[in-house]
Length: 214
Image (cartoon, rainbow, N blue to C red; front, side, top):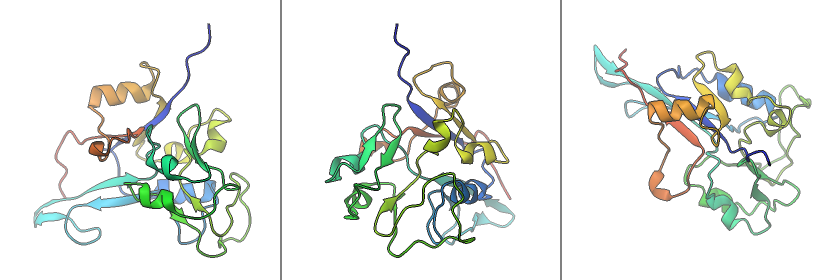
């Protein structure tokens, strides 16, 4: 009997997220992300300004929303790519073939989450050397989170998962009902961003169970 196909996904616990950006910084190092570009970002939810709480002192509230590629099952980026550069692996990971990418940026326009970035100029990395974990991308291509595919192929979790100091990220096989990620989504009622778009993201957010104040 054939082994059931894996479908990788992630759950992010918003109750645990500290907004520390460790996931974003580690992602840059692991994946050779150039200066000025981010595959992972952490948005602040609160007041109107950046990193501002909502409410009136002393009754203040603020929380964080990590954001990267949602690895959609029905990925609009793949549908509009004229060369097939953006594609979905058998395990559900959405990838870009940089040899096929012509830099048209149709995928960036189609993505409802705004999580793709473009190398407008020759990429700069400081220190100026190849970390060796993920191949560097050239000028003129789109890039994004890959779930650290180079780690997945070695049986390892993405770098953002293992580096999170608050253990706010859970990764695993969504097709396995007994996996840690499946149980967390089921027990905590994991929600997906922009469900109305019908993209069926494989990144789920676990909502806060208690009010967090400053």
